[in-house]
Image (cartoon, rainbow over all chains, first blue to last red):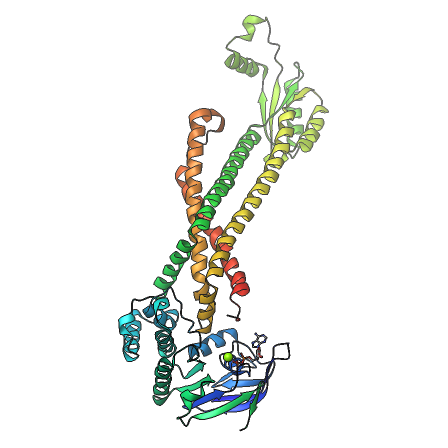
Length: 217
Length: 294
Ligand SMILES: Nc1ncnc2c1ncn2[C@@H]1O[C@H](COP(=O)(O)OP(=O)(O)O)[C@@H](O)[C@H]1O
Ligand SMILES: [Mg+2]
């Protein structure tokens, strides 16, 4: 479902990613591993077409980086849930508004939004924070809200870029368990991390990167 | 819910930048009141010019002892001049009657005989009242047989010509300058808002929000600033005209016919300028501040 063919991004300073050819499969949980600066984030940014490859191409379902329009990029992003290390919540909005945002902006009816957000906040155990400002939550709670925002729109793909990077081990575990659960329910998940202890017990597919290239171990 | 969200964002933006917003509203109000005031005054000036153009007449005095035939011939020659719209013959007797109307005295009582010559009162087509054209026409008429003298208010024509051009020039200059100033003011508050919200904008972009959804709060912000500025301008203008009406009514005589529509014009004009400036500003500053490197 995701096909990378000789993907290359050149930031103009010799950095970036080089010649990446690989696949990601529908329904899989894939771990993207490698030291800081190896190009994990860059690869993920290509997946939601935040940057377009300098050379090579990527196809995600029917979207092709070589001929995608601006409008289609928005559509693509509406189908992808993205989770970042730094949460990227809108801190002066309530938890409800943050989670509801993807539904609000696509013009869903009010009733659907309330039902859906309620179900998801219930699931992640944050129903009691409904009215709180997102900025007032702890790191672990923020990341769970971010996950709720990512899955509220029932994405076909969840991208998690170092989602546990700012969390203590316990919160990190909760977040990882949530992602596992999302994947178990059928959503494709790609997670970049260098938290090796967190993932040591799982048998998900691993992809290693170094200096902007894939490496076989 | 989408609309509620956008409106809420608009008011959050306005409240966050309330001081610059307030300053913008006041300055827009002052600028807009000058623009509209200028507009009204030039409108007024032009309608007076118009009235004058309508009334403008050339008086052609004839030899006192022309025969009926000669007068007829002259009339035919005059109607051949295509700039002329209307010819009105004033006989000796009529001239005496008009004299009596204007001065209240009977010319026959002052003098034994009527010295007033017969005359033609000529009106030109409105677009023929340019001083050069009038000069030409007058020259042609003076050369006709039986014409003794031609009189008209040349100075006023020249003055009008000069001032109408000046008013258009200065007026459009000032109006343009002030519209640009308003544009800059609104742009500035939008810049502040977009800058303060650059992270939020980047987040919305990552979530796949459409450009319009992202920009609309800023466009509304500009529209509200413009409309409030317009309301303030309406207030200033009403005040101004009331003062004028109290003191020098007979000069300007803008007898508050406009009074209620001034508000509408000011508010609508403000809102339009607001929408125009802010939508452009939102787009360009978003591009500038909310680039990916969040
Ligand atoms: N916008 C950018 N401009 C220039 N260089 C960049 C930019 N983004 C990332 N890089 C460089 O590209 C390389 C890969 O970065 P990144 O994908 O963020 O790595 P990772 O996420 O694995 O830590 C790094 O050397 C980084 O400095
Ligand atoms: Mg990274």
